[in-house]
Picture 1: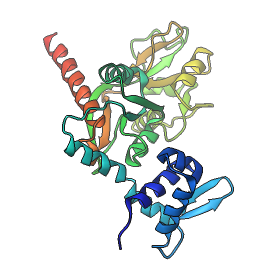
Picture 2: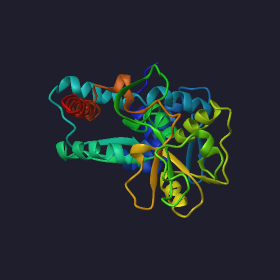
Picture 3: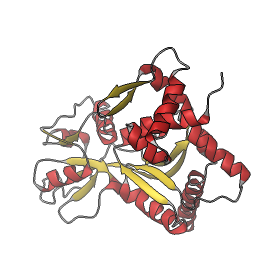
Amino acid sequence: MDYSMAEIRAFNATLQAGNFTRAAELLTVSQPAITAQIRKLESRFTAPLLERFSKGVRATDLGKQLYQITRQYNDLEAAIEVLSNPTLSPGEMTLKVANASSIIFMPLIAEFSRRFPQTTLKIKSVATSECRQLVLDRDVDIGLFPLLGENSELSRLAFSSHRLVAVLRPDHPLAGKKSVSVRELASVPLIIYKPEACTQQLLEGLFGRHQLTVSGNVVVDGRLDMSEAVCHGLGVGFALEQDIRPDSRLTVVPIVEVTDEVVEHVVWMKNRRSLPGIRDFIQLALEQRCGALSEVSEL
């Protein structure tokens, strides 16, 4: 059975846009053209691909399975374009980036923008736990976050590394110490993160290795809220050291038992590396990483 690329394109656009009208705008065609292509595609299956609602559409289980396959269509088009035009550069295109650490990665993003000024950068600032799934779902092209563990679909480039530290007010009793122990931290009020947060998982692993439990009456969503909570005397917070901006209201103190560093990665789908934009971003990250290593070796 022959499946038309127009049908696949209409189906993918409809799911991405959420309704037929926005899908038509996305593909610069009429809405009747979109609905006709979707109808033709659905006629090839024994069950509906979309659930229709008054304000939009949603994929059925069968539609979700189909989308897992067809969402690679855009990559196929781009890959063919690269083969037909080897000198193709990012140019007038969009690169989607999921970023979990702006302080570390914004200089890299800014340099990419300077080199490829015609490229539109769409940056999602999200938690580490969300970055990985966004890359796997092809909702973004590049992920900037600590990729813990292996995944057969993902490639990564180690870009930077840092350790978990305690964040305190300068007038906190522990703030004057060169370092603090886990047991000292367990005896004072703590500011913690939601369970899925990378920092919280590191913290729970650290405390667990010393038969201690992480607990706190203040739970925050991110580093900004943590920093403000610390400033207002709600307890001791935690962060990876390079994620904290210099602030006279905060003191960063190493934790004695923390010896391992967390590696921040540039992450991409293995089968998308050769695509314009992704390819150039990886190359730039590699250049900057090698440059940083050279500077360290010369010290």
